[in-house]
Length: 171
Image 1 (cartoon, helix red, strand yellow):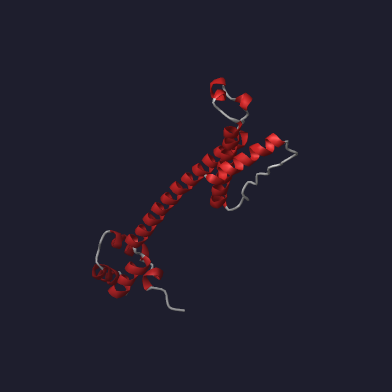
Image 2: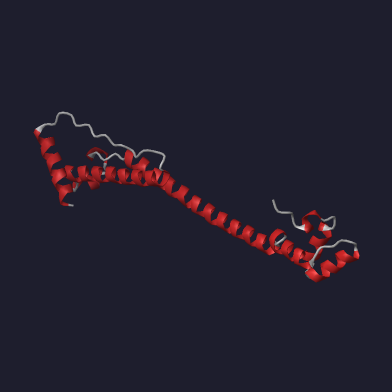
């Protein structure tokens, strides 16, 4: 193992640090040490200044670390906000009630059952897309799986389902 820099073990280390901070030259510090019966060369003092007591270098590192943390924190806040917005979309889409009877009368007049079914499917697609985006961001939750249960359908419901499927296939 290499010997430590002589300044690191000097009894005058604190005074040397103060003189470096005051802007004193390595030659000045070497003469001051000689006057106090301590022999440390200006080259050794220079190495200490560059390697062990490099205030500018350490300040730059601390500054860059601080700026990097600020950028990271800002991006984290943005991502949290994005995830919360996705949660709102998912909750809204899952709680959406699109029955003809629940619509206001002026909307109901020009709205067909096919339009309602299309809107329901579009809302569920939006929920699925929002769930996938949320999963891509968080990576720790599986995407929401939407289960569609199809019971027995009469001829009219089968025809409506075929219309909806055909309409979606054309999009």
